[in-house]
Length: 123
Image 1 (cartoon, rainbow, N blue to C red):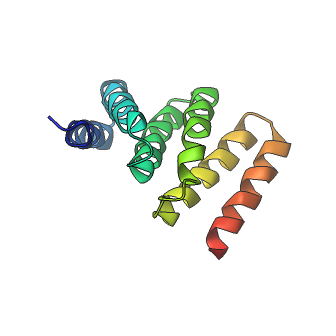
Image 2: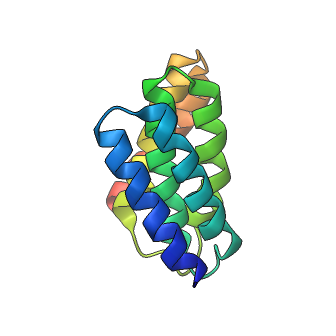
């Protein structure tokens, strides 16, 4: 099966589980979907960012802020790829990074991500 189809199915399962607050069950599905998309990140940069945003949200809900930051920082280059066509996903990524940085006490990073968030709104 095409990796993107498998990733989309895994992402959907993670979304359903997450919507029922079964975060521990949902997270592995989002991780696997993100990893499959990441293998083809040049083709699917928007999917890398969207799935990473989903994964980070569940990690945030569990208070795993540092891990959520790592997930989003790994996805950030995909948000800046020339083929990236999903500005809302980029805005969510930078907004979450700013919030997470504030929660972990990194005010400089929070400000840097707020600036990137505002720049993404202008594009």
